Structures are given as structure tokens and as C-alpha cells.
Image (cartoon, rainbow, N blue to C red):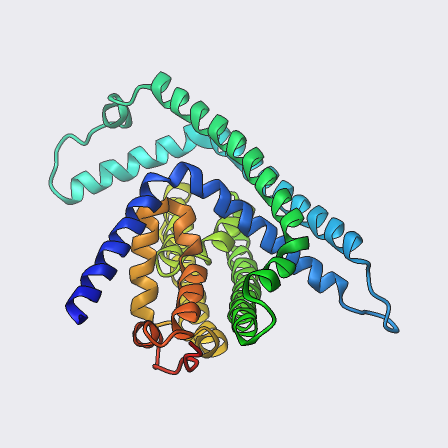
Amino acid sequence: MTLQRAALWAIVIAAAVYLLVAGRSLLLPLVLGLVLWYMVDALADVLEQPRVRGLKLPRPIALFAAFCAMAGLFYLIGRTIGRNISAVAAAAPSYEVRLQRLIDQGAQMVGVEHAPTLNQLFDRISLADTLGNLASALASLVSVTGIVLIYAAFLFVEQVHFRRKLAVMFGSGPQEARVHAVLGQIDRDIRTYIRIKTALAAVTAALAYTVMAWVGVDFAGFWAVMVFFFYYVPTVGSILAILAPAVLTLVQFDHLTPFLIVLLVIGTIQIVMANVIEPAIMGRSLNLSPLVVIVSLMVWGTIWGVVGMFLCVPIMVMLLIVLAHFKTTHPVAVLLSADGNVPEPTA
């Protein structure tokens, strides 16, 4: 029976992975719509809390304010990225000269007499094909954004009747209470993750911006935004947040001092935040094994790309909580946890 159960679980997991990969174009907009709905709903809950003398915003006004806040945030981020892309295009000629000089110096260090030029390195790239692919990607992004907004809107409509549907499905006995307990635990842990991660990402981005502005790195605001988003991607994001602005300093400056400052200072900030402060604050609450986090990063990144990398930790938190509430899957939840300390099964 144990072998048969293991074989059945293997088939179920393989089928689930296949459906996630094959249905990526259908599932990703739905998942992104769910994320957008959750972020707006969580922010509305915060705005709805009583502030002064027990006064609080009505739910519709809180939802509208939360939606406007999220829309304004995405607008500012998009505008910052757009402006910096234009500035990068304008500064490209000066960067090309410096990059060619670095290539020549590197070739001399390894004993190559004739270093390749930038034109030789990129002569096989078709500009027309590149621009065509970029235009297709932007058109796809715009269309997906519309679908995501539609999904989020219908999720808000569905939310009104969700609790009543649960009551009808499971009755008013212990089974309904158990379902509400699982959903409540998932909600609390995900909100804890988002709140702490966002706060630490903002602090890290602010410190990185201060360092880059002091050194004089071009497009410091753009790189600070990238540092903020990279912080949500475990391990790989921290590496990219360190290397990307550091490499720019090699192209921008004629000496290594700015490169070393950016690399060491921002690297230290990232290491302290990700490996000291974050585990101290969040490690005990989420209770995910570091190995599970890395493996899930690779798996979900392979299945859903960059979106999967951002969502890997929330997905694993939900999976751990659900598995912990059932006796048959409780051992799996123990393996996924950091220290084996998971809730006792209720079913």
C-alpha cells in the first residue's frame, strides 16, 4: 500500500507540473490577478482600521483608496523605469567607448593581441528582429495587464459570496471551522511575509540609493527601484541587486574605487538584510527550510519564469500550511519546515 501510495503521489505531482507548464498562458494572468486582488484587499484592511476616536473608513472607500494607491505606485515605478531607459539610450555612446576600453584591457590581460570590437560582438544580432520581438513582448504585456485587471475585478465580486459558499459546502460544523482555520493561517502568514519583506526591501533600496547617489552612479533612482524588486527574489535577487549597479560603475568611471565602494557597501547591506535581519524577524513565523526556498525558487522560476521567482515563497507557505493540517501529508509538511515545528493535523 505504501508503494502504491507513493506511485500515486508521483503521478499526481507529475500531472500537476505538466498542467502548470502547459497552462502557463492561462494560469499566469489568473495568478497575477489573484495577487493584485490580495494586495489591494490587504491594503484596504489596513486603511479600514479605526484611526482617530474609533472612526474608520467604510469598506468601499477603503477599497477605492487602496486601488488608487496601488495604481499610483505602479505609475510612478513605470514612469521612473521609462525615463531611465530613455536616459540610458542617450548615454549609450559614451558607455560604448568605455566598454570597448575595458574589452581591450581584458584582452591584454589574457594575452589576446587583437580584441574584438563591440560591432564584431553584436554583428550577428538583427536589430529588426530585436525590435520586433520587443514590440511583441510589450503588446503581450499590455494585453495581459487588461486580463489581470478583469480577473482582479471579478475576484472582488466573488469575495462577497465566498464565505456563504463555504458555509453551504461544509455546513456549520467542525469541518467548516477547520477550513476557516487553514485559510486564516494562510492569510496571516502571507500578510506577515508581504509586510516584512516590503519593509526590508524599502529600507534596502533607500540605503542602496544613498550609496549610489553619494558615489555618483548614473540612474541611481532606477537601480534603487530594481533593488527593491530584486529583494523579493530569494538569493538570486540579492546577487543581481549587487552586481548590476556595480558593473555599471566599471563602464561609467575610469577607476575602480566607485566599483569597489558600490560592490562592498551594497553587498554588505544585502547580506546583512537577507541573512541577519530578515531571518531574525521572519524566520520563525514562516518556518520554511532554506533548502526548500532555494529548490522552490528554481522550480517555480523554471515553470513560470520571473513571476514564479517572486511567488515561490508565498506558494510554499500556503502548501506547508495546507499539508500540515492533514494526517496523511503532515510528514511532508515537517520536511518542508525549517525546524519541524508545524501545527498538529486536524484531519
